[in-house]
Structure formats: structure tokens, C-alpha cells
Length: 174
Image (cartoon, rainbow, N blue to C red; front, side, top):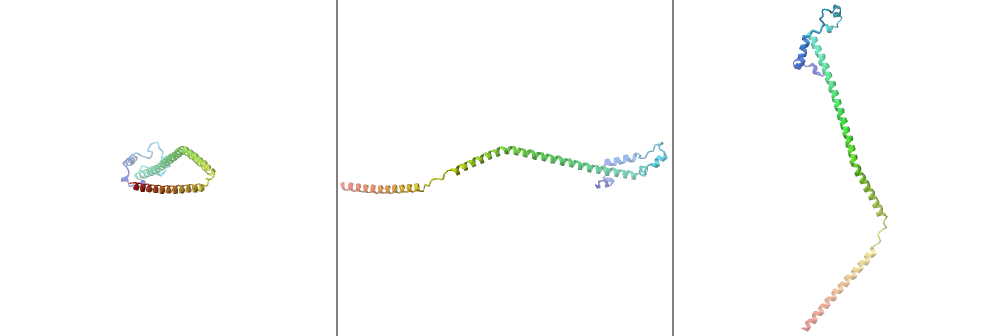
């Protein structure tokens, strides 16, 4: 806000040109028809308006008013931009949420179906009767295996004895 208190050499050229145009134009009425009473009724500032000091003051007032107007205008613009950005972001969020929900619905439906199928399968498994006790059958199978092994061993021993006897007989015959 100290923009208005800059020294004259830093005032833009356009502003300096405006101040020169103010200096050239008289600000008090100089009409020959203006009565002396009307001139005396004017405020003191208007009576002094032609002086260079008054022009500087008027220019300062204009600068201050212009700076204030620019400040309020920039604040309004920033406020509007923020509102637009917030509205756009909210709209984007809503659209993204709707799109996500639309894409999630089929997946959610499939997951619900799978969950139902799993529950049904679990109920079927739990409703099955307990498996029979196979310990007795396993014991019988082991007993049969042992008797088969014993029979095979005995057969092998008998075959070996038979082969040995045959070899001995052949040796005697020769």
C-alpha cells in the first residue's frame, strides 16, 4: 500500500503525463459569468486547485484510490479463481467417485456371489458324515502285505534250494 508514496522519479511515465495535463488545465471556473459570491462559496480546496501543491495532493488521492481499487479488484479476482478451482475440484471428485462406484459394482456383485458359493460349499462339507474309521482296514492291509512278503521270501528260498539241487544233480551226471 506504500505504492502511492513513491518519489516522483519512480512514477510511471503515463502518470507523469497525466499530472502535466492536470497542470495545464485550470480546475477553478474562470467564467466571466461566475459571480463573486459563487466564487467565495466554493470550498478552499477548489479555490486553491490551480496550485502545483494541490495538483500533487489530487494526484496522490487518485493514486491512493487507484491502488485501493486495484487491491480490491485483485482480491475479487483471486476469490473468484479460488471459487472456480474449488468448484472444479469438487466436480472432479464427484465424477471420480461416481466412476469408481460404477466400476466397483460388477466386482462387488461377483465377490458377493463367490462368498455365497463358499458358504454353501462350507455348509455341504460340514454336513457330510464323518469319514469311516479306516484303522481296521489299514491293519488288515498291513497283515496281508506281511503275509505276501513272507510268502515271497519263502518262495525265493525254495527256488534257491531247488536251483542248487538241480545244479548238484547236473554235476553228478557229468
